[in-house]
Length: 308
Image 1 (tube, rainbow, N blue to C red):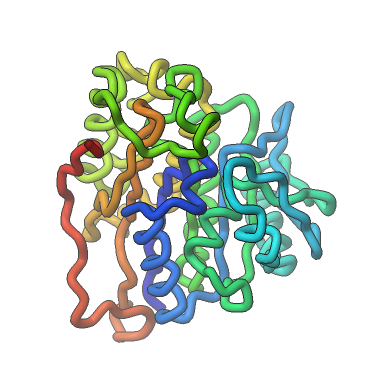
Image 2: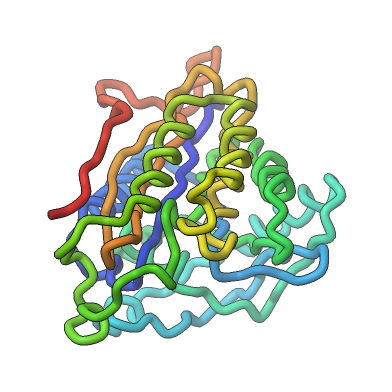
């Protein structure tokens, strides 16, 4: 069987669930594509769940609730029922444990908006959402550790699973401008352009992802944490770890033949850049079995300008 792609989605603020944006349209397109190719399940690492010590956990709650999602119409998420993949979670736990991770189940985990709002946009009809497994981060935020998590689960791409990291390309809540969000539930108005540090790190992220493949991608993504603008662009490391999870899942030598693309982008709150990246595509194996994208144009790397 061929490979599924890997996505790194910048989930942005909660307004991304309701607002009409290029990013939201792309999430929906990726969901439609997953259904068209018969994706077996989804494995997600979000940015809002991390375990202390040296541990990571995998969600095994068979009937999870959902956290409060402010600044959006409640029915958009209250009426959408999660589809947890308990068998997939147990499979992930087994694979991670075999590689030496201190990993265990979390039967009480409630889904958080960093994951469920992306899934809602991908699969507005909850009955069509593939079974989903959520893997935590580790709160030490070791970049190599999170790359290894993705690399460990990478082989599931050959079995029809879609691996997704949801975090943020530029995500510093302390440097955003919140007035319109708080007064009007509006996050997209850009009265002034993003500040230089945000633009610089956004461009560096696009360059690293679209110009590196295979193991070079993993190294380059980790090296971005030493970029001069990194700490301004990522006030905390939690929203960057899902990007490293994605790089681990898409950074094998076998991935060197497939392009990585910036497919959509949305700026919010002046300095938050929600870039949407896809690593690879649905491919076939040497026997012609697996996933195809016949007749479909794969988006090429491109510059996306900030909203006016």
